[in-house]
Image (cartoon, rainbow, N blue to C red):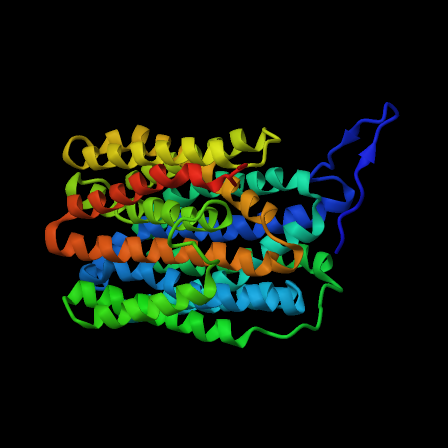
Length: 443
């Protein structure tokens, strides 16, 4: 899978390939279908969860429904990154989609909250396997100057799910039952598989799989689980969880990531901070609106829709620029995201509808910063490290969101929704402070 050469017009000017031009059309459509599927699941499930948790008598385990997806995805991200570098992106992608379907079945048929959490964990493992190969496909298929537009298009693929996902999820949960939010997604997997199959034909290689990274990923996932369980139950097992996290992060992330070393390490760390802020806040928006302001699940979905639309607008704006350093979009985007979280916190104590403009601002900020960081990581990665660094990017995403959601859930159980939102606001402020460090020093 090599990128075709650029075209040159009669005046000698280089013309950048269009994403839907002949050589790129199938890859672009297939990638966007996978992103749309995963986005629709996330947007629809979020509004259905208050109904499911109440029916299954599991409100005290509410955060784990979301955290399980992220934690199981940690192991899958590492397996997928090494697998894609060693054997090509086809097998991890298609295996991930199959596992994702299995998770939908388990969650849709869950007889209790524990089964629902288990199904969500299987979903997370499947989506974790499937996402990383998309980054490798982008690196292999498209020339470097087209990648900002590809990542912007991937973010823009959230438009349709953001428009209809929350409302459809709420309507289905209210009238057909929350289980169909999961089961109804299964037929959507086939079109994505069909479109990407010809793109990935012949992409198989024969390198060695990095087994040491798999052990580190297991330690990382186990450490995150023990840490969050220990925090939630005030248990000393949290210390053991910290040890597992420390070992896993040392092996799996570039050196200097936790210290926010300038360049690639900070770009990867920033994604975790962004996802922690966004996911940690968004997870509890429907619960806050339903329990504090009397919203229906469908009405609560409107707020999630506003944030996702803002994300798409921010991503579209970022994709219009050829400057791929990512620094200015990271700085502005994280500042807007922190402002949006602050507005959501105020809406908790004032009017529920005040969350709409606040989350639009937060979404625009996320849309600016998120794809810019993807571009920055690929630009700073050697070709042989694109899969591993894309895996590190996904690890940062999933770990950031799982820890933020889990700690927020413990704070909500202990001190109420305001405490949980204050926690995600702190993460957003840290991200805004560190954002300028994604740019490599010119000194």
